[in-house]
Amino acid sequence: MENTDHEIFDSLARSNVNSAWAAVCMEVLSRLGVEHVVISPGSRSTPLTVAAARNPKLDAIPILDERSAGFYALGLAKRSHKPVVLVCTSGTAAANYFPAVIEASMSGTPLLVFSADRPPELRDCSSGQTIDQFKLFGAYVRSFHEMALPEVSAEMLAYLRQRLVHAVDQATHHNPGPVHLNFPFRDPLAPSPADEPVVGKDVLEDASTVLTRICESVSLENALDTVAGERLASHTHGLIVVGDVNPKGGNEPFTDAVAMLSQKLGWPVLADVLNPLRGHAGEMPALVCNYDAILRDASSVDELSPTAVLQIGPLPTSKVLRQWLSRLDAVGFLLAEFPANTDPLHRVAVPMTGEVHRLAEHLSHQRSDPDWTLAWSTREIQVRKRIETALKAEQSSFEGKAAWLLSGHLPVGTPVFLAGSMSVRYAEWFWAAGNRACPVLANRGANGIDGTLGTAMGMAHGNRPSILLTGDLAFLHDSNALLAASRMQGSLTVVCLNNNGGGIFELLPVASLEPPFEAFFATPQEVDLAKLADAHGVAYQCIDDWDTFVRLINHLPARGLRVLELKTDRKVSRTALKQILNPN
Image (cartoon, rainbow, N blue to C red; front, top):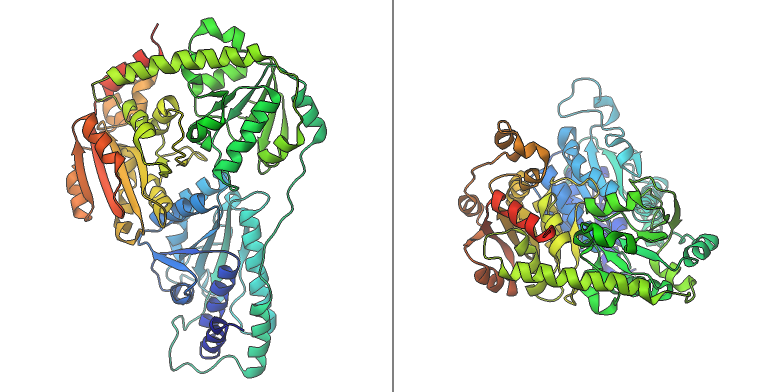
């Protein structure tokens, strides 16, 4: 045994039952590849908290507010593709995880939610801080399990180990997402040096066997349908549409696989900003990023209509693209890494489960029509030049220019997180293709603004200097995450587009109804972001011109949280957006 094993077994022999149970739990998790445990304070969860904090293999991160903790863990899991553990006390604490659990479920992000609980005899009897935590998250978790009360025996420690093995497997394989384990604990909750040993030598030997056995969680990959692949390859006028994909196998292998598919099929690739393709444009000759603007021009739509569409991941955000796809008389193919219905348009489509590289390797080079790809490439070049010319000339505080400048001036490889509503849409419209290889993430599972700052901080934790592009409402909605700024090991620059309200509503018909538009839809908050940042010890700077903005995003700080505020005008941005996307 390694020295660390001796230390674990020694601490087991000197622990109370709860502490021993929790120590084995955290050690098994570390051996299953878990690296981060995000913990909110509470009494009933003391055994789990102490065990995580004392395990040197785990990065235990204390976050005061459970809602912020949930999104912080979500960001960590999105970046690492590994399950992150959430630990909270009993009562309503776990209920505050619900928004993050929903997003994790809908985006296929692995989370392990460990809620502490009262023992059975203290439930349903008006005991304090006690609610019904059984299946608290309903169908939004991949599985729920009520853990046994702690018992230190070879049989029960083996049960604990294997339950954790299954939990990690359910969170990471086949259909990744959150898993909820409910841990009941009786008093005493805290370890004490005076505790009598709970593990004798005979049981300790059995326990050492439990822990030294290999802890692993693996699943076999699904095979792709050969017949569906042949049907796919029979079309010469097809499109590959790639939406929100955060490939667990890495960005470059994913890009190589999509490029291979495009080359073998002879099909253009319409790529949302929420996947790696725009950051590796040199590898993708038939890449189309300005599809939203292209499809607004009715004169070119007919010649660009395909007979088949291969959709990889969920659909892009663009409403224009979705409406166009819904009108097409084209057969659809839906490729996803795990079983899920990714088509809200309900087209005639063939679901295909598997990784992109499996399909790319399976297909041989097909007969193609070079004029088909040329037609799309020609329109892409024309529209890109027009949009770039307009953005260069734009001197107003047009919010979309911030997304465009970020795409061209961030340091290579900068991780980017996009808030919902207008931030992600500006990026889809104006994030230019290039070779900066900036991974771009967002919470598009549930498409809300909930937990924006917390998720971005989790993404930045232990990562290279990162960027969050957000509006003022999304930022303020999650401002409680600022309390965790000192816990973040890394650097996050928040680019806040402050138009004093919800800019997305300016694009909807309700914008003409005043009242009640401004008070009930735009909902301006009148918060001084400089004072808010100062109250949390966070760096702040107000940006008055685009040259200063470019200078500040060119060089990101090595550590800490920084807020760059760009004060904008919703009405000006709405007018500029319409002119750029609809010039005719």
